[in-house]
Image 1 (spheres, one colour):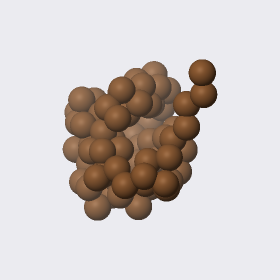
Image 2 (tube, helix red, strand yellow; image 1 turned 90 degrees about the vertical axis):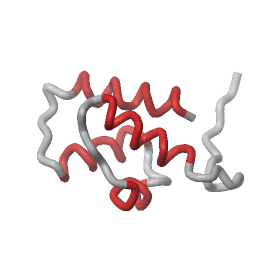
Image 3 (cartoon, helix red, strand yellow; image 1 turned 60 degrees about the vertical axis):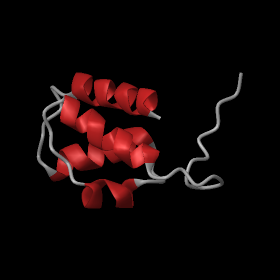
Image 4 (cartoon, helix red, strand yellow; image 1 turned 135 degrees about the horizontal axis):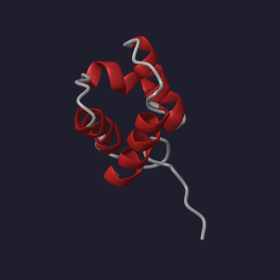
Length: 77
């Protein structure tokens, strides 16, 4: 099986990926605004998550948190 992430690149996605990021962060108790997440679309999901956590100076005992967020984003879209 091959899975391609083409949302926003080839197919208009109505911001489902951005919405998944917002929901995933909120599930971890981190409120993130759309304007903070939208510019990160196009980055690898793990990079985008790290960028948000680093901007908020949230540490990485959160390696597990980062991994959970990544999984939640994948499920969301």
